[in-house]
Length: 263
Image: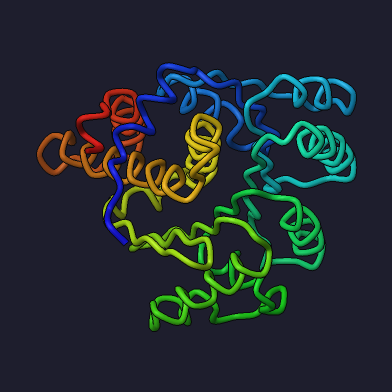
């Protein structure tokens, strides 16, 4: 398909400043909030069943991240998802570690059936496609045969009626019919915990501002972070490989990306 004009999707985020309810993991909650603020969205977090449901009623999108799933958190997520589905707002799922344990896979499968967009890495998406929890080699399968991963993502998207985004050296975004590939980013992004989590949060903002086209909005969100990752690396001084410096530059670049840059 023809590459869309990604600039319009960031323009909408900046104009609307959508309220994004993030039910995310304990490791990255601050990073997700800061990433949303950096692009012009409004983050809100909760860990209470009634509060999360009330917030979902006024939010523009719901982001669900199972990175530190617990019984208590799952109850909160169920409550917010029920209200989000009733209201008809997008639900963006990050199935963190879905291929690691049966517990995570069970939660990921339950939530994926209610999601609008699923954003994960290759092993997480393959787990949702049926790879056994803890199965070794799923990352190497995706790395060695990119087209296999594309087909798996397309089948999952079509079967669930969602947009599936698979992030890696080359990102895949598909709704089962149309497929986009995003090139960019930098390997230092893989050395920081939570870059995938904040990407899912950013995706929530983009889809919230453009619910009529979640496929292109998701691709625009992935391109935003990929471009920020590239520019952050360029900002490192000389041979400086400090992850602390890179993380600071990454957030700076997330905030500095303009619609014209995305175009």
